[in-house]
Image (tube, rainbow, N blue to C red; front, side, top):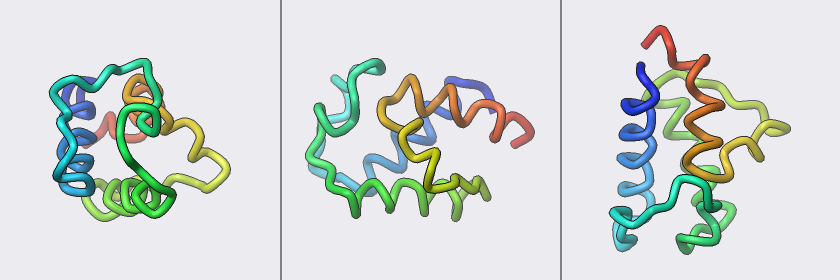
Length: 83
C-alpha cells in the first residue's frame, strides 16, 4: 500500500470508530486525541481494526507511534508495503 492508501485506510477505521467526528479537517501532525474525542478504548479499537483488516500486529510498547496521522502512516508504511 502507498502512504496515501494507508492514510485512507486509517481514515476509514476512524470513521467507523468515531462516526460523529468530522474527519475532513483532520490535521496530519496534530495528535488524534487533541482533534477527536477518542478514549483509550477507541484507541484499542483502532489497533484491533488494523489487525483484523490488514493483519498488522502492533506491540503495545509501540502504540505511541500511532499518535497522529503522520506518525501512524510512517509507522504502518513498512508493515503494509506488501498489501
